[in-house]
Image (cartoon, rainbow, N blue to C red):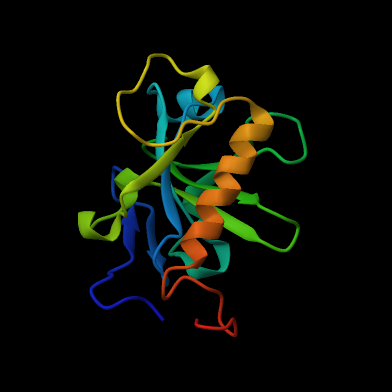
Length: 167
């Protein structure tokens, strides 16, 4: 069940890909990896992480998926068939923890987007970012940072999978 006041409405920039998130995101982070730089067309991606099962895409045929790299654990990036903007990425923290990565700009209600908790792949940054958020560089440190963001998000009410204690 979603938090009171959480709308969960998402859409791509052109509005053709519409999605609904049934639970609040676990965390928001900034990713400086080269994949995000390419997909977002910006110095870093501004994204949230949520449970994959909690995301409903109204018409999945409007989303084009591809892996940016040929490694098995890379993110499957989904873009709008019409505006080519990023709409969702799929990854797994562990084989049984399927996650959806949602660009912050896709949220229709800005109040649904939590405050950012950190930066990952900061060693690939285009420029320095002056904030007090933790910055993780390199693959292993960034994966650890991402896992920390997700695990910290699980402590918030309404974010645990159904059946989990406190869900």
